[in-house]
Length: 314
Length: 268
Image (cartoon, rainbow over all chains, first blue to last red; front, side):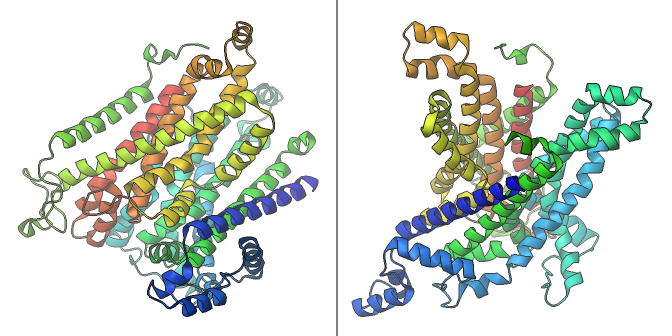
């Protein structure tokens, strides 16, 4: 419990640091928001009025504190391009991106754990070799290209889904989940391949350990040794990998969203970048960072639950 | 330290990786000398021309030769990857070597920052930089380069930590060698195997990241071809001209696969 508390404190400190740096960076480099909203020909009075309205006439540190306090309340300021609250613009996109990442996470685990065990158990056989070669190739396919191939194969040829036929989770939740399976698969594939490789490697290493030989000598069957002894140890490095993969998948969803024309955080981030709509860009980046931080922290805590040695070392 | 015995043992990964990257390098080099057609020349009569003897990869929505564009696009992807890896390795070595060698509060602070940056997916960092600096080839190179520094710094630091307590370093200190000399003339060459392997992984990740950025329309600006942008344009004509998407995608896969095999082969 002490360990978990420590991890959460670290997470909060990192979040404050990250948001402060993001705020500073945008503040210094983005230039005068009032000028970019009204144009360079605007009268000084109008500019001053708008600066006051946006709170730009206050010192940076105070603005950061205000902005962070707003962020905690779910208030992300006002979009420069649309003049509406940022929170309203991105609020309903968060579940879309999160669903895609978690979906991909589940697919990765469902594919990789059985396949990793299977490959390790048939070590050096032709199935294992085949899996290794396919793995190596799948790892090299970027999610946006596998997304295109999936669209071509399942969307156009087998007609399992309508490319571009995204339905909102508000109108049809089952349809939403059905559509999201394909982008999630595209994100999950390379990560699953990496996980299979990792799991196979660690299982083979564990197999040569003394405790496994002892377990066998006591008359345990292969299944017993595998599930009651080896798997728990072999899953430890995999848990670390899964955590990093989840963080990557959250960020990677930005790209795959474009392939499947899904209106999630990615699309709003890209349009805001090209519109120089900084409050929106900042909000999306901070939210994705927050999701990544939470997933990293959760993984650390889960890891310590599986492996009690972590707590002893503290 | 054993010498990297990679040339003497049979190493399938290394050979396969070298063949793939060698092939892609020749492919790109040929493109520097001469592409079959002008990659940006449009010809309405060749719109979506199928694969044929004169246009082996077919033509795109503007009647441009896809083979020429893939050649040119692979080169621009590779250039960005080269710049990215250079920035990442150079600053990674500087930071990693000094923190690993000297340690202390400096090390503690830099590594905390490093950890915080490392925890973030490089795509997100790159997008943050791009939104501050604007898009374009050099901006992407710098953005990705910065995003790659922490991972190199981490690897180099770990190696320096391991090496700095070895006897040869102590003897060098007794001989009066300067810290700078020990770090870069004596320790650095000993980290070569690890460094080379991570440089190859760096290339692998950089190609992927560049292709992703140009797929999002942030990297190389049109009309210059880039593999990612070709893929994003090809998406609209997926059913009509699947080869438009397949060939640029294949070039990306060959580059990534080649570098990951090389990395595996070197670290073996």
